[in-house]
Image 1: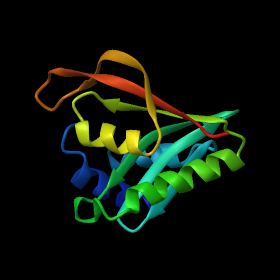
Image 2: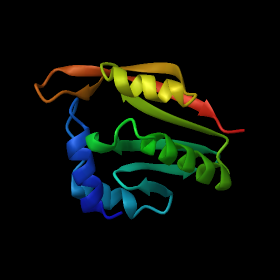
Image 3: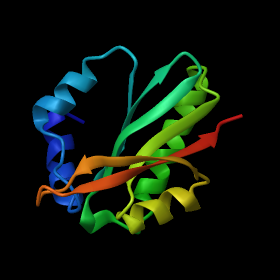
Length: 137
């Protein structure tokens, strides 16, 4: 999937916050630690550094949500991260993004922390980031 395709899916899926731009995706894809797992209408973009993986962005096109596409790319990301030596994976999710929190919880992630005022909402107010993690071993 190209940076433009990732940005297009993110623009449709990220209704709770400003999505990454094509340039943001392109810069991340150029980094050697980056790991992209994609399927039609869904992707997980992250990185693996030493023994830890981080999910930087996950999006499923609204037309493909609840089809299993998101869960499939998360599972593929975890498998490939483990193959690169990761023993755990973590992510940040907006505290107000209840559907995403439910999705990650169903995938086995648990809340491990909070970053106050981390996300800027489109209206200029702030939302906390919840830190969630999962062991891969």
